[in-house]
Image (cartoon, rainbow, N blue to C red; front, side, top):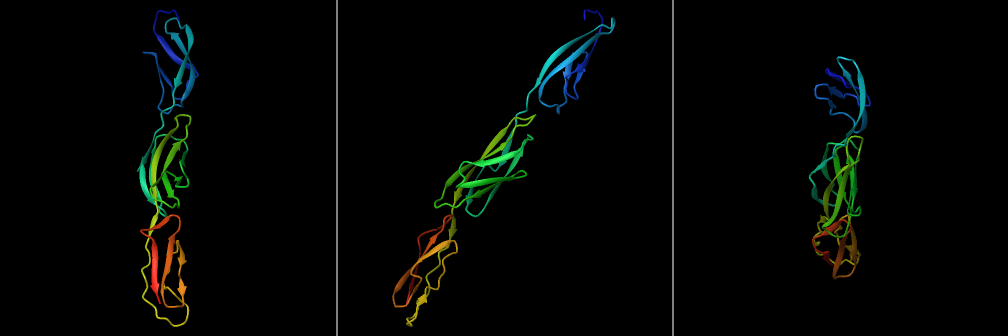
Length: 219
């Protein structure tokens, strides 16, 4: 302002709510809740002796904060039929979502801050899927993501043991053993004549027997 006295600085317009200016060092301060964005702040300087004033515009950019997500745990070995969970911690305020690299192996969902991983039925063990948890960008935070590694195994079944021998009576008789409900029954389930028979149990997808499940029975 070409004056020779002290100056008083004030914000005329353009600043976000809560902004202040320090006339001693001409510093503009913002609260930590100020919204990210670009502000064209108009500052007025007044010569305290001549009372002359002059304005200038300052372009101030407040960048978005980096978003971050953490998961606990970040991996797990799952057995078909039993879900796993992981706790989500984030410092952003965006919407959380999740996706699976292979939904035929594992799917996911989020409730609040809990990630739920659901293993899917397959015919082999040790299959892996990567679950990605993402938080959308918002006005003040950048997007962020974190991954969970899911290894899926089949659920083990117990094969029924062999029944006691039966005595020929001229009528049709069955083995007297039932395969697990999540398996398929095959082979010799009933017979009339004296002899040795084999009933088979084949695990459905998502399940397994330690070895072939063959039930041997005799009449």
